Image: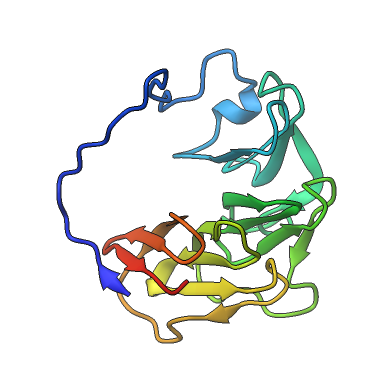
Length: 196
């Protein structure tokens, strides 16, 4: 993995694209307006979407292109306690993962219809987890978090391996896959991996 230098990037904006508002619109339901910081939002179709980062520590779903949001029953970051919150969400086909600040991973294998907190009866990821992403076109996913931790799954989130088992004074906040093998990990130091 190589560090990405701090350079100014000029991004070409394709015709017809406009910047996304940094805040929720005022007509957004109160449940979503209270999302602290940047909620993780993803849409799986033109009308169906999911969001995390809400103050109720919930996973939210919309089936009307974001006009209304409802809580997915029984899913929250900490099982009803602590200062945990779901931080990010990612989909690959029917597989979905949502990660929390307490290390819990919430997983769906049916496109978000049903969700299960993982690991069931096992050990949660060992540190605060802020970001998650599936590799393009694969069941490989990476979750990143506090203390320089990077976790990887090759089976859609059923099991996880720590890439860096030793703790370091570094925070990773997000991960982005450019393609199936190239990933960017963003944080207090950013990295690029070409063997993801």
